[in-house]
Length: 242
Image (cartoon, rainbow, N blue to C red; front, side, top):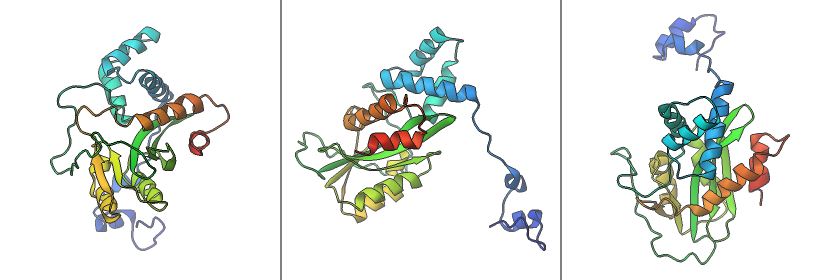
């Protein structure tokens, strides 16, 4: 809404009219340093191989490979990358009080046909000069990837876009996810309700239920990442095309 070339209204006046901080008009995003990119990539490699490693154990592994890394730094980067340690324990899932949590619908349910259960999840994907976030919708019976999206941020729209593209192909009976903020948001739950889909969310102790999607992530990261000459989008496309 800001017109930097307006001859009548200065940027100061436009910022005041829009209730914006004038300094925000001049802000330029600072790209991550090569050191941060390399460290996040290595954390992702360790986590992919050993998803039960905590930030403390990953920090210890990194210290064995090079200079010591603060455990809190590793924990902060893992949170940025949406990497959650897989292990059973109490009080694993905390969310905002306003979040809408749906019941888990898959207990004891045999998966016997396509479009019976779909799953959706988000992961971190290594790129040459940084990283991207990948969301994918997977049919649990056929293991078919119905849709996927890449984004540089964890903003809600890229999740909604992937779900909308999947629903344009078919309608599942149940859509399963974790209890992350993307999947408890009204944009997500209202979309599925409007399509008449049963919404299922993993509860405590259900970390391994999304194993089909976790296998997909391992394929993308281990088989795709070493491919030279491809950018992150091409790597993902080559692995998810089938």
